[in-house]
Image 1 (cartoon, protein in one colour):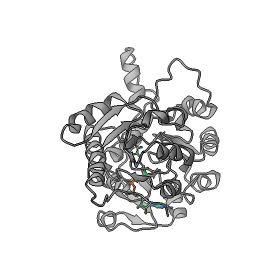
Image 2 (cartoon, rainbow, N blue to C red; image 1 turned 30 degrees about the vertical axis):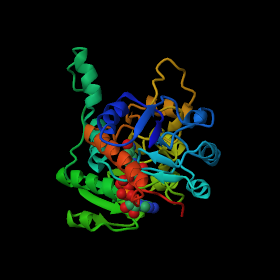
Image 3 (cartoon, helix red, strand yellow; image 1 turned 90 degrees about the vertical axis):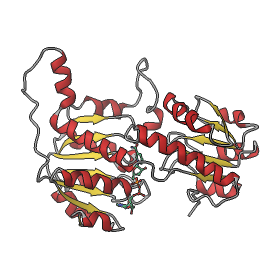
Image 4 (spheres, rainbow, N blue to C red; image 1 turned 180 degrees about the horizontal axis):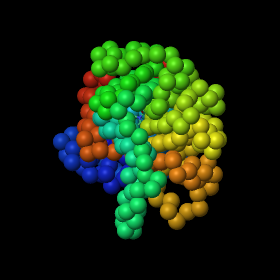
Length: 331
Ligand code: NAD
């Protein structure tokens, strides 16, 4: 198939160039997002390949469908940025990469916790300036702390394994109990109990209407004072204004986020010469106990290799008329 590849970064090219030769497909890389404006570029192609930062709404789908696109291949697991009903109405297929490396995201989650707790980011900067003072660098042992995990799918379960390795008591909430998690000693509780007992709350569920802003003024009020909240899932699971307020009141002791509600206007681009117009993220960045990474939890060599392999396999299966197990449909 002829693939038009959007929002290309150097690391995408590295991995796709390695595998494309072994397929019947050809790729043209574009740095732009796929939008109604750039959609004219897709004329003559069969498929478009987009990342998680690329909204795919009805008007865009109508436009690319008119131009002959049969498939939108997402090189991401999440698909809340795609209008699946519109795609179905127009007969455009949507493929995704459901699980490429849960450990990549789970390990980044652990990295956020350890950095916030042991302040390695601050220590690194101090030592570079010959400041070997330890004042203000005290952390706490993870051993025997209670970690509340919301969502025990592939990433949540990989994260539970890491935290049980640290000797933490792991509580979980998920409408679907995962036996693998139970077998490693995870206890399922209701959300209120999880909020009440956890020293660290980590989010690993999808963004759906029921989970939108699940971390809000009311849920925060049920948590321990000084709680650490970690979000490597989707930005809108957190009501940012409520979290800023709770950080100011010292109810939340630490915040680690790899995703942000308004991230599509910020993340994945070098904005170092720009004036950031988003006041909420600049407020978050000003807290000494908040740590933000720009949606990089997935970014390991193993994950990129797997994303490439599965994205191309989805297109090969489609081209060969085989059922595409990673096709997503509305409803
Ligand atoms: P998954 O589908 O394997 O697991 C999601 C789990 O959430 C399931 O067990 C499901 O039962 C549970 N769930 C559904 N509704 C829930 C609710 N109301 N409350 C609690 N749990 C609920 O998904 P996954 O692959 O483990 O991904 C988890 C999240 O991580 C997704 O939001 C995904 O978009 C995000 N993610 C982030 C990155 C990153 O780079 N930061 C990369 C990949 C995935």
